[in-house]
Image (cartoon, rainbow, N blue to C red; front, side, top):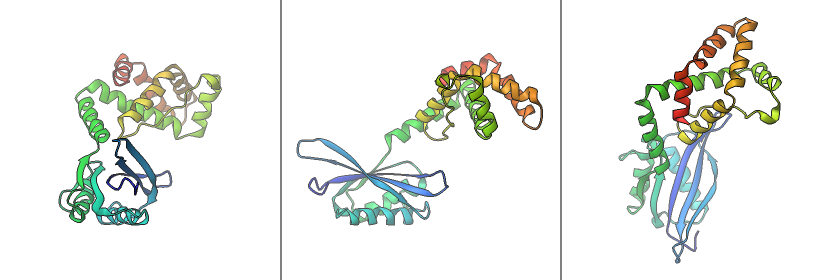
Length: 224
C-alpha cells in the first residue's frame, strides 16, 4: 500500500454477537498499471459510534500503517450522520485534514436503501418481510423449536433458517429463501407447537394462519 502511496479508505461499523461495536477498515488503492487493490486491514473495537471516536480510530490505524493522511483521496462510508455528516461527521473531519479526501456514499448501502424504499411501497412484500421476521425469530428463540425442525426431517434436506437483517437486502433475500425452502417444514412445526398448547401456542397458531394465506407466499416470492 505504501508503495502505491495514493489510497482511499472504506469503513463500516457494526455490532458483534456480544453487543460490542467494531469498525471494519479497508484500504483501496491502485498501482501504475491501474490495477485496483482492496486490502482489509482488520476489524477494530470502537468505544462508541460518535464521529470523534471513529475518526480517532481511523487516524490511529493510518498512523500505525505508516500512511500519510495527506495521500488519502477518497472516503467510502454508509449514510449515517456520524459518518456522512457534512459538518461534524467522520467524512468532514477527515476532509479537514486532507481536502482531497472526497466522501462517496457506499454504493451497496445506497442500493440497499433504494430497495428498502421500493419494497415499502408494496404491501405484499412488506407484510411478507414482517411475517418472515416473526416466524424465524419465533423458531430460533427456542432450542426446543429448533430441535423440532431437526426431528421432522432428514438434516441433509434442511436448510438453516437465517435471521432477517434490517439493513442489508442481500441478507434479507437469503432469509426469505431459507424460509421458502423450508416452508412446508416450518408450517408443520408451527402446527405441532400450536397443538401442544401452552404459552407459545397462540403465537404459533397465528403464524400458521399467516402461512396458509396465498398473499404471504406470493409476497415472499416477490421479495426472493
